Every structure is written in C-alpha cells, then in structure tokens.
Length: 461
Ligand code: SAH
Ligand code: SF4
Ligand code: F3S
Image (cartoon, rainbow, N blue to C red):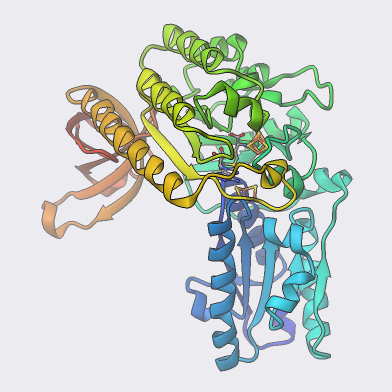
C-alpha cells in the first residue's frame, strides 16, 4: 500500500472526483477511485466533504476546457476556507498543459496526465509529504509503453448493473479538428484475454451489461497485429454467461465493416444501437477533416446495417462551422441527416483546438453563422428524434431497470423505475423496486423527444 491516509489522521481521508468529458474519462475516474479507495481513502458523497478533490478534465472543445477551469477556480475559495483541502488536476487538459496549470491555479497541489493514473496513490502520497513544504507534484507521462499498467488497477464502478470496459485507447486517425491523438497518445489495444477476464469477473459480480470503450473500436487489435479483431472479440464476449447485453463506442465509419454488421446481427447480446459519428455531410469538408469516407460511403454503410438489422437505432456526432464550410456544405449535412433519420445526434459547434491542423486553416466560419446553422440542424433533428420515438408506440421493448426514481407515495405499493431499452432509449414505468437490475418487458405507451414511458408487461424472472 503506497499511501495510508488513515495513519496521518484519526479518520479516513475522503476523496471526491469531478469528471468532465467522454466515457473514457468517466471510466478513468472509476479507476482513480479504485486505486485511492484501495489505498485507504473513502469516497466522499459531496464535494464539500472532500479532503482531496480531483478534477478529471476534458479538452475536446474550448467550452469543455472552460468548464474544468471554472470548476478549478471555484476550489480556490473552498481551499481558502479549508486550508487542509488538497486539489489535484488530471485528465486531457493536464496531459497537454502540464505544469503550466500552476500559473493559472497556484493553489493546485497535484497535476497528473492521462497515462499516470496507475501511479496516483504514489503521487498522492508524495503530494502529502511535499505539501508540508508548500511544493507541488507534477507528473505527465507521454510514453505509450505504460498502457498495460493502466488496466492492472482496481476499478470502483459507478453502476451496479452496467459498466464500462476499455478495449483500446488512444487514436491514430488525426482528424484535423481533434485534440484526442495529442492527449491520449497512439492506439493501443488490450489483449483479448485480459478483456474477457475482466468481463467474466463483472459477470460474477452481477453485471448484466458491458460497454466496450475505445476512440475507434473498429480498429481494435490492428496496431498489435492480434489475431482477434473487433467482430471476433464481440463473438468471444457473447459467450460469457451472465452478461446479457453488449454495447460499444465509438465506431469510426471508415472502419465500420460488413463483418461487424454480421457479428452484431448474429448476436443475441450485442444491442441494436450503433453510434456512428459522421461529422459532416459534405465530401469537401470530410476530406479536409481527414475522415477518409464520403457521404455516399457513409450512406452505403447505413444501408448495409439497416438491411441486416432493420430496427437498429443510430446516433451520431456532427460538427457545424468547420473551416471552409459554405452554405452548400451545410446543406449536404442537412441532407444526410434527413436521409438517415438518426435516433439522436450530438451536435457541436466547431472549436479551434491547440496543436490540431484545422486550427491553422484560414477560412474559419464566423460565430454567428455557426450558431445559425446549429439552430437549423437542431430543430430538424429534434423533429426526427420525436418521430423515431413515436414509431415505438405500442411496441414491446426489453428494459434493463437501472434506477428507482420515485418512491411509493404516489404509486401505491409501486415505484417509478427507469431503465434503457436495447436501442438505448430511456424508458420509465411503474413497478416494484425489486426489479432493479433485472431485464423486463415494457409496452411503450407514450413517446417524448428524449424518453419513453412504458407499462410493465409481466415480471420476468
Ligand atoms: N473517437 C470518436 C470521437 C471522440 S470526440 C470518433 O472518432 O467518433 C467526440 C466528438 O466531439 C467528435 O465525434 C466530434 O463530433 C466532436 N469534436 C471533436 N473535436 C471537436 C472540435 N474541435 N470542435 C467541435 N467538436 C469536436
Ligand atoms: Fe478524434 Fe478522429 Fe480520433 Fe475520433 S477518430 S478521436 S474524432 S482523431
Ligand atoms: Fe475529452 Fe479527453 Fe474524452 S479530450 S472527449 S475526455 S478523450
């Protein structure tokens, strides 16, 4: 044990982690908790209770950075009131900025990168020693060789029934707008036997659903030359008993193959929801983004998917206002949205990121035009999302019950429960709290834009 906070204080020290960004960061925070709880810390339920407060930051857009920095800024006042509070800053901004963060926030005690997570107990111990001398600990590793170690640490999962499993990390694609390759390093895939062992352990602990994580899961194992590729990995995970649902994110369309569609279609566990970011409908912009597919290639892949799995739900990411985007390019994006009719879209205004190629492109789009296009696109998608949900009215959907959201008072002896369908739609229905963590059938009786309401059909064992 590297650090035992209970020895320098009568009670166990409490740690709280504020997480920004994607599922990778959420899952990194679960590993940070795992390591620190194993080293003697207790998880604080509220920020105010923490002795050690960590920010796990995201750098994907300027707004995400602002959020992390303003959260850090608020901690200055907290530390002034509570001088024993220790503050750590990690994640993707930390990886990029390193010790420069000290200039902005001199009250930070610890700065650590995305490849230093496994060293957290050691760094925290060092920080507690150094703090007595008013010094800080900064450790940013850029060496991809440490990747395997990141996954040998304990994980304190936030959920009881569904959980994330990293299958790969980093990215080699260098889309010209994206900071990820600079903050997460080169692609590295975990050995298949490690992934399967982790999922088997989760099944033993009662987990029903796993989401496989990677910046581009479709290129799983390619850099390492594994015999197992992503579709064969899915087929292997399918065999793990106890696990009832498998999801994955994210798929890059350029590597989304017919073989993968086959594997999903053949599986009873892989859910029929695919997140397939298209980013733009314009071939000119896609080229300039370095995405390596055209609109018609994207549409062809969607067609293959829908032919094989007709009811599949599709969601996507799209960026408006990429440098050089003219009205006709934007119209192509709207065209693609209308053609595909996504179940949901994550829509982003292009944001200049340091180190990225597009940051230096000359024809940046003015903010007011970006905003106008954004509103038009959002309105179009909102209508489509409502219609896609309405199409589910009267159907029966399998729901993994994840939460009791309202107590008995209003609903007699029953509670209001919330879960997700295989299509990843949120459904709420009335039922007994014992159903938590089970798979149930619900008939959809009301469809809203962002969620569904259901009626429990009959309780499944
Ligand atoms: N690996 C994933 C994407 C991870 S980033 C993939 O390739 O699909 C999540 C989303 O953020 C991206 O899909 C993109 O839509 C958006 N994004 C990334 N960089 C951005 C930027 N500079 N400005 C605006 N949106 C951005
Ligand atoms: Fe970023 Fe592109 Fe890699 Fe996704 S594939 S993480 S958008 S560089
Ligand atoms: Fe953000 Fe880092 Fe994820 S930049 S989107 S937290 S990989």
